[in-house]
Amino acid sequence: MTIVFDKNCWHYRLVVYIFTSDFFLESDGIDLEAMQSINMEKDFKIIYKKKPRTVNLCPYCRAVVGSIIMFPFIVLWRLFPHKKIQRTHEEIMRRSQRNTKIARYAVAGFMGAMGIWKILDGDYFMGIFYFGLVIFNVYSVPILRWVAKKMPKKKFKKKPVKEPKEPSKIIQSISQRHDIICPPIWFIEKEDAEKLK
Image (cartoon, rainbow, N blue to C red; front, top):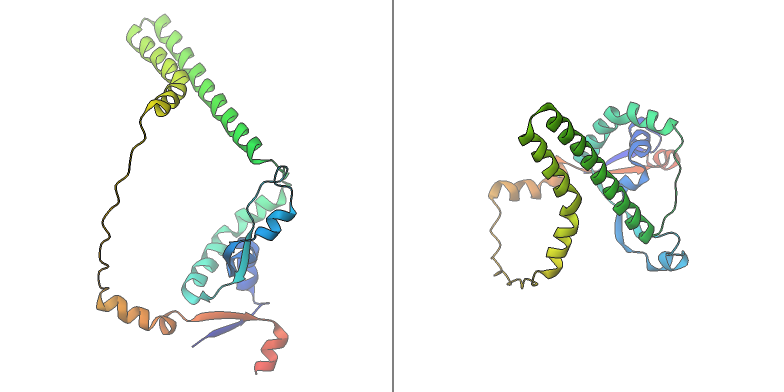
């Protein structure tokens, strides 16, 4: 049993608008030819080959319900222009480290101000506690990196392979009748739909 829908139906267009046409595609490995054709130093990205996938009724229904809920938020998001800046992998990592450092120092500044305020207020214990947090925040990442370098590399033991358990009879009966309970869906153009009639 298969369900056939026209590609002009509202729910198909809604799912494509929210999740893009990638919802109906699946990855088929890395596309090495396409990756060789671009300059990886300027535009670092992994390109995957795509092939059509079979979509069953159950996940499609969930996608339609999710699309209806997300629709107003996605429309608002797409109203505003978004700049796409192409960065290399090295630039992305540097930017990430810089943002992490800014966040750490911002938190340390706030904790330091709280510590000064508590000491001026006469609560020396809390003031020292806040200054301890400042020191921990500023020096914890470099110390942890240094410790990670000095630690000996752990050798992992191979875990024994467990024999697979037999699935329950209920799961077996559901998997045998899967195409009846949750049939696959095919989307065709309007002209092709008229030919099928």
